[in-house]
Image 1 (cartoon, rainbow, N blue to C red):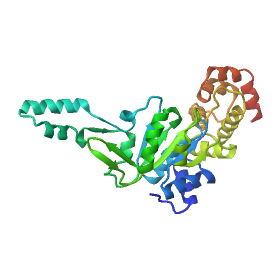
Image 2: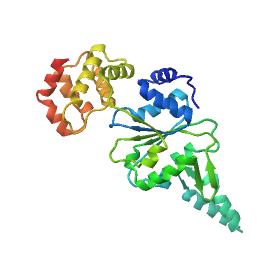
Image 3: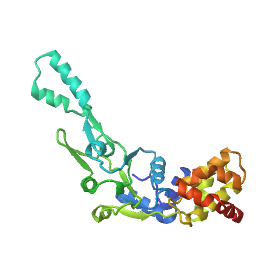
Image 4: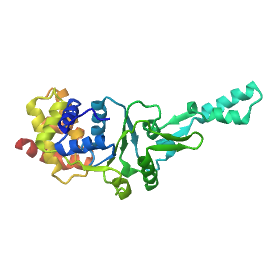
Length: 295
């Protein structure tokens, strides 16, 4: 599946998509591609786990198929379901034509054209000529029962639809699972995967990300925004800002034609970077002025 002969080639490919990957992360992605193993990414919200999957798909010029996990996620939303409305309409048409053969009708109604493919079945597709990137986002939000089902799917890369039989992947997808650690994911699932912890980036790495993603921002503005966000993460906040907030803040200030960060513009736009009222109240009076004075 991989188009990259070396880890450095992969880093360059991701960089062309605006994603700055350090050596350790690039090695994990490279091995996942080479060994055809799922990659389990863990880290705080906003460190770039989801955007990494998008960057990989773009670098490989292939499809990104995303399954967003949540409590109560079941097979009908994750794997497949039958289009009952169309089946009922088809049955009425057959009945109107007269002489419905029950065996033939069942075979017709439970054929591939009435099957609604959800993300897992889209990725494990017998007709695919190239591998997709399957992103299973925030697996820690799903129930343990779904984890067990996923464990079976990732073992064989096949899905059984009782009416059609067992469907096997013609091209194995690159599977990327992400977790924000809202709960511990079962060890059995992790053992199927390569593992990589993604931490908040260093100042230099985050600045490179901002410059790459927001080229219209002045160099001074990008530097100041990155430094202030890094300082904010060191404070006791309800929700620390992620890299996406740094990017959004730089883009917002650039859209307001700011060449540098000042106290007034920071107060006006602080809702771009902090998403909790308690955090905004905690930094609005005096703290922002102090942080900006440092940069």
